[in-house]
Image 1 (cartoon, one colour):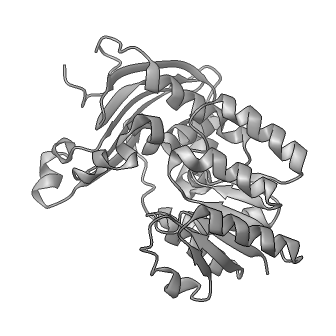
Image 2: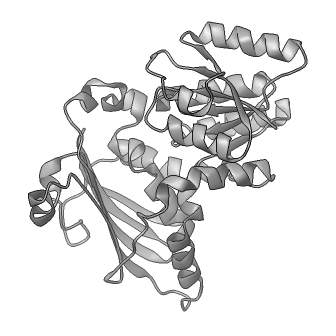
Length: 312
């Protein structure tokens, strides 16, 4: 049985990590979050120690290591801008890290983390769960069978409505979240790279705090993408029946459905990590480079390559 700690225990995604630790028959020794709304711990690991101060958590980790019962893994589900520091802490504390997306905000940080892995002898594992989804794997296999030089035509649309709280939280601060493309889109860009190959063009048509859009060309696809937090972008027919989200990926006019099973993929990631597989630091590079460019790129004129949802 492996000994885990969790940083960011009060966050939205934290219960998926707790469930994955429990499903893989391991134990959560300690959890940390500056927010104390962590009653969910009782549903998974009621005996876990909880620390609302990072200094307290760090002292606990040091004491456990000094007593010969150090942590095996530290899972990181903290705000995006803290991932880098928390991964560094994990490795220096003698544990492997399992970190949520985005791994880091800047591509250069990937090189620094790789060097730290080498220096400490511990590893960073990442949550690239869409790479394990059966529908995505099937699409990748389909692409692999295509004739050389052929490119698919792809429209990616992801609308997930958020209230005014979003822009008042760390998620609304680009220096902390990386902006909308990083915070809610990075796993889609990783999926596109995983399926369609290297990035050949990255054009941005729209970039505001609540929506972004652009065009990406890969070795095997031309992709028009649109992300939004605005409920008014949900198609009228869906909004009329109360829906506040809309996720669609169309490939050569065919809809690719991958909503089902999405929440169970954290456990699959944990199983792979514990089996000595999983996804490492370097596998995040292309997606991090993609969103870093989107964050700062000048806007291109809206033309035929723009997503249909982009205002003309």
